[in-house]
Image (tube, rainbow, N blue to C red; front, top):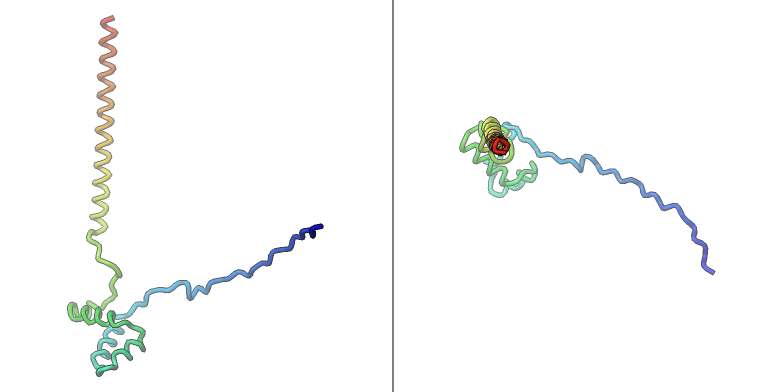
Length: 135
């Protein structure tokens, strides 16, 4: 004879809450003064000391190269905070104008179709009236 089946409450696993500090990481923002300080320290480094400076400040060599390039091209103003990503090719006003022109073109097409329908209805009505008059 088989054993009777007994229902056992399933074990309730504890809820795992993620650490919010680890979940959300944000970009580091460097001030112009900090960038100038790092550039001066990097220029003062002797052979082999630059890696130590970068590790201590938790920076990458390409960041230092970019800061040097920006400083050489535009001076101190080049080191000011800039938005990440490419520069947009169109201003918001230009985008809005394009959107309105596109919307306007669509509405003109709608008007043309409606005018065509009205013209067709007028012709059909005239044809019906002409047939009634002949009868």
